[in-house]
Length: 56
Image (cartoon, rainbow, N blue to C red):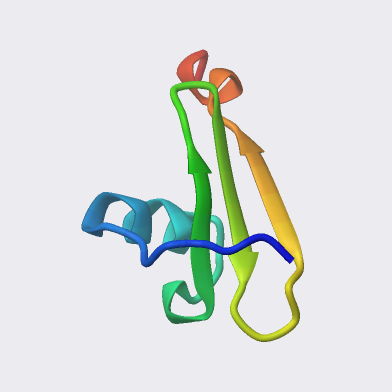
């Protein structure tokens, strides 16, 4: 399992926009292209591609 870090305020907002509770998720990777989070309990990893959001 990858170890994550606590999310910042902006990352909490992004997690909430994904329909998730930010208290249950840790941030693995936050680059200009990729946002990756891991669940604190189950270890499930979610990935969101930020490049697709720019076109909206």
